Amino acid sequence: MSGTGLVFHEHFLLHDAGMSVVGSPPEPYPYLEPEAHVEHPRRVGRIKELLDHTGVTERLEALPFGPATLEDVALFHTPEHIQNVLALSASGDGYSDAGEGARLSRGSFEVALLAVGGACAAVDAVLEGQVDNSYALIRPPGHHAVARQGMGFCLFGNVAIAVKRALSRGTAERVMVLDWDVHHGNGTQEAFYDDDRVLMVSLHQEGLYPENSGLVEETGGEGGAGRTVNVPLPAGTGDAGYMATLERVVFPIARQFNPDLIVVSNGLDASRSDPLGRMVITAGGYRRMTRATMNLAEELCNGRLAIIHEGGYSQSYAPVCGLAIIEELLGIDSGVADNLGGQARADRLRPSYEVGLDVERALAEVVAAQSAHWELEPA
Ligand SMILES: [Zn+2]
Figure 1 (cartoon, rainbow, N blue to C red):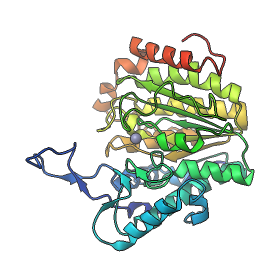
Figure 2 (figure 1 turned 60 degrees about the vertical axis):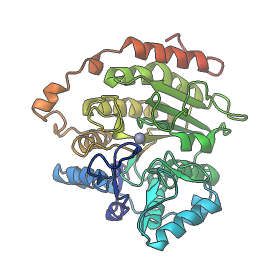
Figure 3 (figure 1 turned 120 degrees about the vertical axis):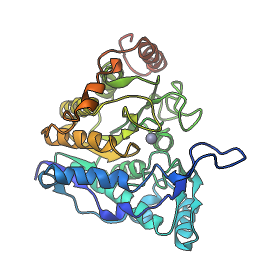
Figure 4 (figure 1 turned 90 degrees about the vertical axis):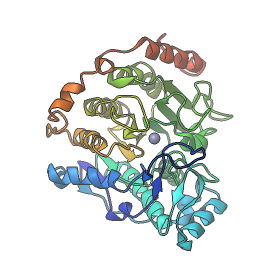
């Protein structure tokens, strides 16, 4: 079989993080009426609806999958963390946290296991040649979760577990993870910091969540020297800056590493309308980044590419970006992203076509930090 696989299940809409107030509240509190938590079920529901309405869903291969086993989750997480999520989820006692900012409620454990299982299925389908590439439209997201706790809306490390599982089964030997969520992929980094079989590249807005994480000088630990590549980028980097980052820094390193599988941690929170990020990538920019990564996968590993959903909090624009990415995997363009009328005209942002001097400086710092491990042109 060939084509593009899709992982989706309506149960992904059942994990409920409740209501929230923006910012850490000082007294008197609240100043503002609480609103729905940004990690809302509609994040994936709206993307699925857009895929349905544009006829894209029927062109995708629906990949069968089920919840991950506890043994698979334990490839990364401590038994204490797994038991904690299970117990909090089973208590049915309102909302609780399985770590810093990892809110959950009744039944979240089962949804989180299904998300891990979905990521594993998307990776396996590509490795087994069932499909050319795949997209896992899952939640809760995973890339912040560390071994001993959840963090930043993430309960279990979906990508970390799927990759560890493939390595332990011997279906992959060298994996590149490309994390372009606007936040640092600290959990995935932790999972592979000392592992020379995994190249973990994170592009993220500098100074965002988690604090003091994803710095240029974090390049891998003992046994994994140079296998961690952090690219903190300035606010407003935009389409042109992201493409320059991929072409000048990320892809040259990837070619030297030579993976047999590429897994993208796809955060749509680097989009130009995200409430949490300020990186102004347009839907067209996400499309170009996807195409470039597909070309890289074609060049290095028979096109084997699995894209796993992470963040992305604009209820109106993230779905358009998600559609653009999945269409590009299929090699089609419905034109929806280019037909947003006045919005498309508003997208004529300078960072869409020009690489800023602050981006140039950021790339030069990455080249300097990585030059001991990789041959790179001066940025
Ligand atoms: Zn994020």
